[in-house]
Length: 324
Ligand SMILES: Nc1ncnc2c1ncn2[C@@H]1O[C@H](COP(=O)(O)OP(=O)(O)O)[C@@H](O)[C@H]1O
Ligand SMILES: O=P(O)(O)OC[C@H]1O[C@](O)(COP(=O)(O)O)[C@@H](O)[C@@H]1O
Ligand SMILES: [Mg+2]
Image 1 (cartoon, rainbow, N blue to C red):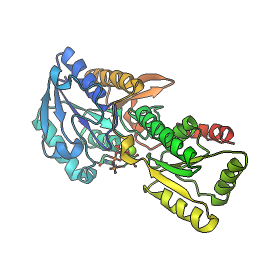
Image 2: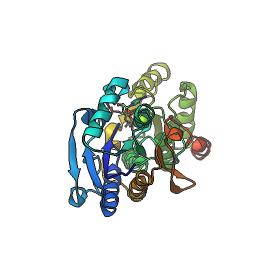
Image 3: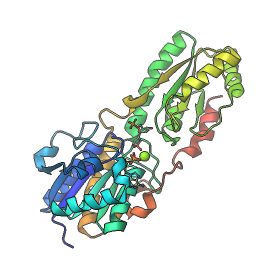
């Protein structure tokens, strides 16, 4: 089928660099004589028919902006087969021939369903700070989120040292270890608690006390968020009640999702946006842009519909060795 009009949407959590990908899609498509229809607020906006025609200037001056100009959403309705049928009817009525989805593993499952149930041509671009998608080394936004968290932890370290305190700093990432491990290594954290770790409070206290005994004036423990944000408070209470150790909690939260994308996010998103359009035009669907062995390339979308926590787990040994 000839593609004349490409739809584009963002879905799931926003991530820094999504705008760079949108810009690359729009500019590549227009340079190839193809129309681009922006779909606002993800799958929820698609179901409401929220469209905007994109032109060269609608993506001007956005390369440095965090978030997404198209906005995004989580849409429970889209999990249902009847709503995906409605979505495809809306896309076809709008004369959209193929869809580019910028999002995480959940969004890719929605895209895969559009293909399987209706053979609607889809191409994914991985955009999530969590870096938790199978078969890609990278997802757009991860390095910016990590940089933001590092800067926050460095500031907390100033206070931790000045008051000789222990801090539990909770980072985002749901069940993914990636942000916690990279931030932990880069801030010289004394300990990193991964999402599924059963916390060994005794070891934590022993480690902190060993540090104090050799003259350390502060301890930073990076806590990966896990399924429900706020687990740091549980750990804080056990440390206080059972070990009489006072620890302060800092939950970094959504501060990690916003902000201007760092160079890697701009560069990779620009390549991915460009490649996604070429894939749609070349009939390479359903597919997804990925990073493998450091290179941006295409793979089958089916390879990227599961969550993965593979990317950084290999660095837990490094973190432990360097934090003694
Ligand atoms: N199995 C699925 N089938 C259809 N749509 C899905 C599925 N999983 C997720 N989605 C859609 O993708 C949206 C975003 O998924 P979510 O997991 O919240 O974020 P992310 O894509 O960033 O991982 C969901 O709100 C839903 O609309
Ligand atoms: O902003 P929300 O909807 O509360 O979601 C928080 C979750 O979104 C994330 O920031 C990003 O997750 P997704 O990219 O999968 O949407 C997670 O790290 C965090 O657990
Ligand atoms: Mg996700």
